[in-house]
Amino acid sequence: MKTRLDCIPCFLRQALGVARATTNDINIHRRVLNEVAGLIPELPLEITPPEIAQKVYRLTYQITGNNDPYQTEKRKANERALTLYPYLKKAVADSNEPLLAASKLAIGGNSIDLGPTSRYASIDSIVAPALADELNISDYESFCNSVNESSRILYLGDNAGEILFDRILIEEIKQIKEISVDFVVRESPIINDATMADARYVGLDRVANLISSGSDAPATILSQCSDKMLELYYTADMIIAKGQGNFESLSEEEGNIFFLLKAKCEVIAKMLGVGIGDAVLKKQTLSLSHPVL
Amino acid sequence: MKTRLDCIPCFLRQALGVARATTNDINIHRRVLNEVAGLIPELPLEITPPEIAQKVYRLTYQITGNNDPYQTEKRKANERALTLYPYLKKAVADSNEPLLAASKLAIGGNSIDLGPTSRYASIDSIVAPALADELNISDYESFCNSVNESSRILYLGDNAGEILFDRILIEEIKQIKEISVDFVVRESPIINDATMADARYVGLDRVANLISSGSDAPATILSQCSDKMLELYYTADMIIAKGQGNFESLSEEEGNIFFLLKAKCEVIAKMLGVGIGDAVLKKQTLSLSHPVL
Image (cartoon, rainbow over all chains, first blue to last red; front, side):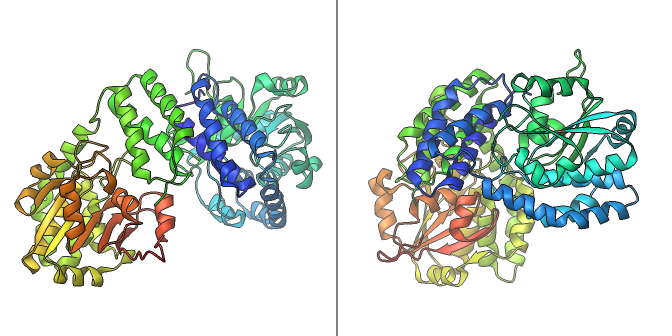
């Protein structure tokens, strides 16, 4: 999707949040706002929101001198999610439809995001509603069929903490059938997105082949991805794309993509026809003549 | 209060909302965003948010060539509020505490604001919760005492539509005692704030002396007010200040001021220790040695 004008004030708000997470120096907060404001007239709106976010975060990291301001939050999210692992496994095992339960948890885990808002509800509080509530958009039947027909899945991860929930889903998929999963992380820290170290920390290396996207974008910008990643992308039987960033960057790309996310801002909620906070499992329906969005 | 850095992305969002209310031309929307972004590095944060809003709206009106983009919304709000007049009068008369009921309605009417958000719930839907819910901050006892001890009240109005609710409160005050009320409107249109024409339309001229602040600020910026207005301000026994803008501009001014408002953004809600959407009737408690906020 292209960036909307509504995204521009949001980027400014995000930059301020990052500056505050890094330092208490209000002169630096102000400088970040001023310099990000200076970017605005030059921002090309024909690119996707995460491509602009990448520019905004890079500039902010450069000004603050800290290229991983959410390092502590990421570590805590991974640790907390890991402690929930036995409970989540039992909840899935006890469910009437374990794959659906695991999918719902993976979507619920996408709440652990410091981009659209500067805080999220506690990780513990995500679990019960994720399991109990219906999906607001559900292409679950298609998702099941695709899992059954696939022998290789490319799984595009999103945030630290969330990736433990992704591990649960991958393990559940592997219960159903023998399948190879490649799990993609960001090349370097951006927002609270998961990198290789995060993926290893939550044990994703035990259930998937880990690979970096080759880019620090908080999304899957194909033009920035490594050749290895692109090879996996174009040859996978099924792509599971987690989170708003991956949706924003791939919503106009063709493929057997399933977007699993929580809608977290008005632009995305409106685009999907859901409310903010709603849970989405959506199959990519793009054809060249009928763009989905 | 001084402007917070959080206000800056919000001004940008408001400018976009105004541009969209004026024209469908996305090139103009973009130009507004770019030019308001250009103001950011020069914005002095030691002034109040409505003083900055005044600069932002003036610039936006200049770019769009429309200095009253919410004219239709204002007219509709006045019309709709007027149709509710008999119902509101009866609700107040039937209440056990008519002055409290009228105060709650006046605070509820402050929801009719196109600054902090680009839309509000329907005017009809404001009434029942305004009457039923407790005030989240209530200096109502002090408010009653002040009404009883005053012979001249200066009433600082806020938005079109809302001012019909203010008329109800003024009529209720006048039921209690013979009292003179001066009602202040903005000098010229800004956001959906009430001007002289709006006040006359809802019949405020029947219950109060109408006066312009002398300024187009969406607030009461004393340094911009006319001599006549300042004379009334400094000699009134009691000042009723409606809405966030009047609160933001007078929160550090001394006086027997009662702020009646709905908290509409995180900055103000946090400052007041309430939630967004909460109803506030707060007496000014400023003394020179202990600033209230």
